Length: 371
Image (cartoon, rainbow, N blue to C red; front, side):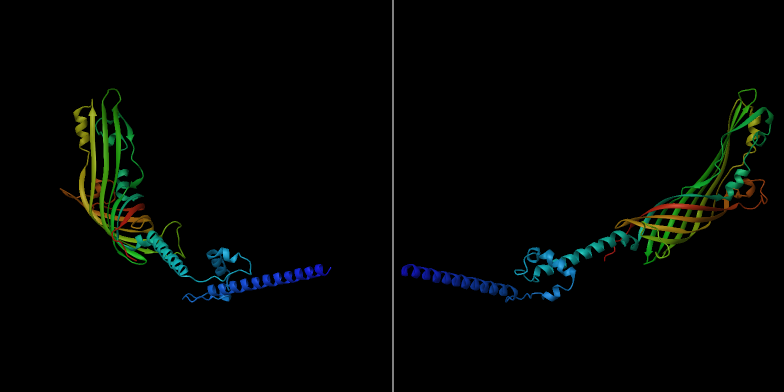
């Protein structure tokens, strides 16, 4: 029995000693880990740890910390480590700022740099309006056989094969140069050309024979314009068009140094006596003359950049012109040569034109503006 009691006492002592050694080992390991962690938090390096209370001031900073060190923040509270600022963070911040600046510059280059440099433009338009001279000419066109064939008119019947177009339509072509560009305005110089022409064709046929007379009369006008345009951008708070970079009011003045005007009448015939043709030709009044004048423009225009150095402009304007002093070899052209029934037939020919013009112009920057 004594032997058994001694053995049990020895075993109990050994258990106590084992537990004491284990406890000592755990305490030693914890102390070692704590010392090791303290070395990480307060190293002898030059980078200082961020205070915990500063990192917890805003949710944005906590989200950033979680993105930088997700494994650390998701660890248990007992082993969670305080994130430290590293040189890599500063480099990332600098790279992000540089990328942001480059993106902003790229947006500026694409959207509005084109609007800040001199440019040249090529445009084409469509215009509709009134021309006093064409109104007078159309009112004097022959509407009966008597006005074309004064001899034996009753033996012919007249039919219109090509009636006159009642609309005054133009397709102006322009070239512009914009050397002066300011923050909210610009000044351009423009040269343009426009043409308008109308034709009447009629056929006169003999009642009993195969005789026929083809009559043709036309009026053509060619005009060259040279002028200056001023644009002033509108405040977007008061007027804005979606999808464009700038909307402006446009005002311009033109000089028309050359305007060509011609009236031509002709006859072709078959199976008709020569005497009839000679009498008909005596009534044909033709002229080829040139004149000059002035013009003006007012309207609204919108500009949109297509790339860094190119863009497009769309404008809707009222365009007015005054043309006069038309001269041919025999002297000045008179009103009666266009319309004999006009109230002042012996006055020099002159007229106004008033049109609404829609134009599309493609513009190319001539210089690169450095930021």
